[in-house]
Image (cartoon, rainbow, N blue to C red; front, top):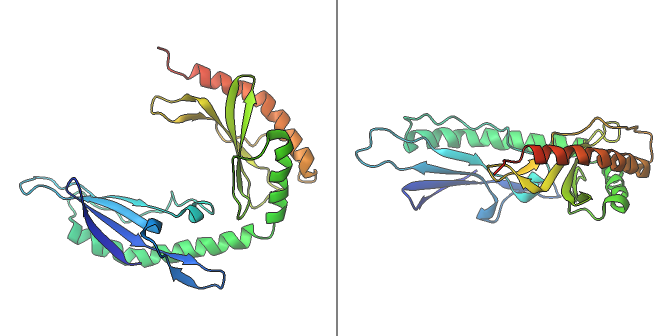
Length: 235
């Protein structure tokens, strides 16, 4: 993974590491555009007489295609100590990048092995939700592991996020509700915890699974609305 550096405004050095994408023929090819950088970071450049050095702020990025497959939020980067300068940290980071690439490739292969065999079953389940919830706003077109629908309970409008395991239908989907009318003081939409305790049988037809979830959400939407209203700051 080559590492590019550039000087940004505000006395910061930006670095970007380019990754590789997997082709259908099994080859790993370099990504063609810088918009698919895998690692970006800001390394503050301290003033000449500054007594302390600010640590680099690094963030592992992923392409849209990669985010549709799995999360990289838990991937750990080498620590950048407060007193570590750029010249000390970058060689350490570059040495780590091949290990990171190898780890991500292994995760991708395992995901394909797990997710591919039952894609058609998950796709059929998502399609079975449409007669009740309408056309999905978003859906994972590759492995059919995620879908988002718009729903309402009276005047209360919210989103329903479906997270479908590779063990589906043995393992039922996890649901998360997200209000379109309530936000936290930090400006984040109010969301429910993951919901997975509802009537379910892997032997049901997909249409019955959809009906059971729809009926469950009819009641759960009232609880979620109450939660959103009660946790809303009072002015």
